[in-house]
Length: 441
Image 1 (cartoon, helix red, strand yellow):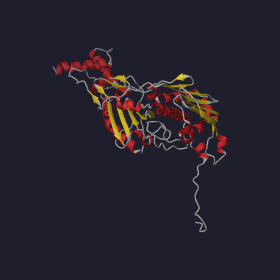
Image 2 (image 1 turned 30 degrees about the vertical axis):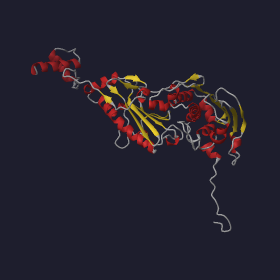
Image 3 (image 1 turned 30 degrees about the horizontal axis):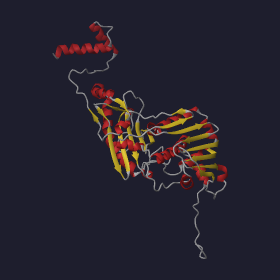
Image 4 (image 1 turned 60 degrees about the vertical axis):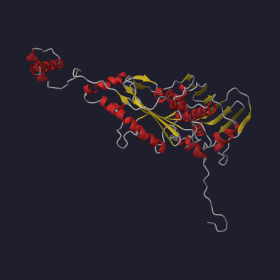
């Protein structure tokens, strides 16, 4: 301490290099694009009061929304535009461009959480950013030259190019990024990257697309991708709604239809946005404590978990929204319920794929009889437990008998019977019937 004056202080000023380089280091390019889509949908939710999770949980009918998010990417330029309501001058000035977001006073189930997604995506993709937005009453534009901004360590503002009144029927936002980073340029030139992006979008926003949102990538409309669940009078999936600390937790679980050969798992959503896709890892409890690890016989297991809250800080999603906060008390509460409710389903699959096929025929009959239905139909119904009604086996049901014997012994039996051309299976049936007729009648 300096006895002649005030004590020294340690600087905690942020570094622009951290935000521009390090903050983008461990996030995939496709996830950054989804972050930009989250902003569009967040604006849509704020302006239309859309809540797809509420319709699932309460069983109400979602009004069809008319909104479009369009993405165009090439090795030279990235562009995303929407007509989801736009950003006001006040929000652009005080909230949208903050590197961090408190979300104080938010009262709708949006997708904006930490306030870093949009800026992180900007820095990940390129060096020149144009942000234009308009509401029904005003319009604005902010241009960012990342290199120039980075060279001003104490300047943390983005000046408006213009901010003025405007009359419009509907608001929207357009973001264009040029001077792409070399690795981004390479990925945007790859058909494989485009395929991955389309697949991610079709799953992450499936509930919003089903509610009417249109998403278009390089001119192609994206379809919602949500695995269907098997149901019949003899096979009933489980549905359970839990409320804890301001969060609604809806769990739906059962089997995928017999014709669906894709390995499934747990699908976890926060406010309608997918954050875990067909998870079969410790994140959803597999191979934790006494729970079994994922095995191929569990491929048909299909579980959905929907978290909903108007306080987005309570939801168990990561900053990248492609993972869960496993240590969140809310998530731990859900995890306990997930495994309690799924245990009977896994027991059924153990029976379905038992070593003795004939003993599992009733389970196979039930499994094959399940019809594919959208999970929303289960989600919007009342709470119920997993139920399976098995056909009772009678004494007249056929049973398969299989065993192995040396070829030389089989050959001698055929010679003794005078049936040298008879198949091994037919020999088995013949000898069984011979023994039964002489000893059991």
